[in-house]
Image 1 (cartoon, rainbow, N blue to C red):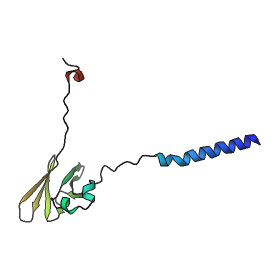
Image 2: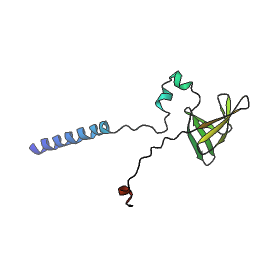
Image 3: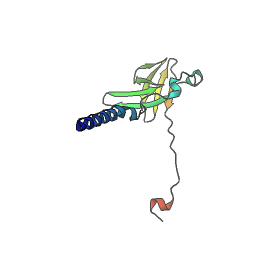
Image 4: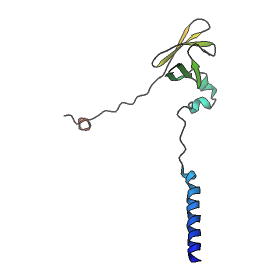
Length: 121
């Protein structure tokens, strides 16, 4: 009888631990999701013009992510057509024939490295 009660307690403890595990799981942000300012619908930020967020290259895929929208080369984006992709830029031809070049601005933090860190004198 006592052994049966101990086993029941152990089983209840095990079940309660297993049920609580999903609560401890960390929620990860989606790296492909557009930035929060773009999703906020803030008109002042959206009126600054199109923002190139990413360039996608792969077998049979040459596209840019502009303001959260995937645009393939040759495809229309608003009143313009994506005509060319570079390493960090996308070129759009507007209806008046002018070209609009969107660039990805990378922010690279440079920190000084002391000789002690490099192991060089």
